[in-house]
Image (tube, rainbow, N blue to C red; front, side):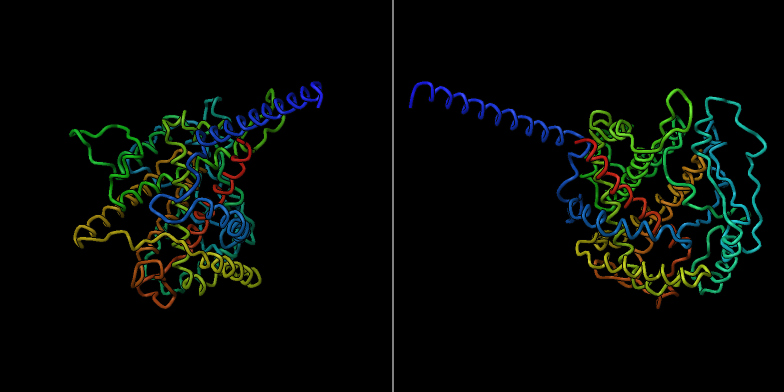
Length: 463
């Protein structure tokens, strides 16, 4: 070869190596960025479980999410009977903006399924006579307001639903069923999304939940710090870790929805704003830099909460397979039963469920005491939901807490506790689920399923 030819060969080789180096460096940088960002912990085994994040992503996004979403649009699941007028038992209402005007409008009588309502008076909205005078609250009032619209057909259906429920041999009393403040809300008209509810009021809600009603590590030097890193929970017993991670997972799910269904006002204030994912808001809530390093672990806790509620539905499968899912529309009721059967088949085919038998073991007296403490803490959190200032936020908070409580009730019911244990309709003298419990169980699980699905969207946008 000539000197000229060798020169060109050397030049090509040099350029090739430089290109590979640059591409490799860019690839390494991308990996480093992913390992440092929101999703750095969303891989491998979920804490205190053997199941992997990747397995749940596939199960949820490909199989459970589409079927569950379809079921939750049906009449049995879309109408939630709730009392949003309970007084906060812990402090006086000190909120503003969303607190008074972020309310749910009652469903008109001509819009409620007729099988649901039985001589139910339409509760008066205590805020209807007085509007908020602070103009700066206008966005919060609009975004947080609940739509209670129901058709006359729906109202009439509710009457039959109530008659059917009351004919059942219920073991547990239905909470607050006689209250005049109870009303049906159409969940499809009131999706969980950004409402503008923020500030001191919402901070106090979560601070009270975490600092006063979550289990905490024992203080090392005789005092309890105001805040602590989640890694300290590894020093706690399994039961207390489970409680904390479930609450954290719920909190994460709520924040994910607020980020995925965020309201962006129209430019210059003209025209309608748009709803959609807000990457900046998501990063603010979950980036390590903005959360004292806690954000990635909070995202992983979402998967833990999902696993617990998934296991509860699996355990209750024999019971749910015997449920009528009655609304008065025989064709739709059969469709719902068929959809439930298909969903439960998928859930039961999953082999790596949360194992509740690991909880409350050891010394029987200590275990019983811890279980009662576990239950009381959770009851307190459910009561805190009545202190939420935005009615739409309160609606979804109460629904999801009730759903989680129903999941725990299922897990600790039955003759045995463990991966193979179940509850069924033959044991109604010792175990049963009300319509409200079933509605909240599936809708709460639906919120978690939606959140995991949203994470895929945010992961793609952050690449």
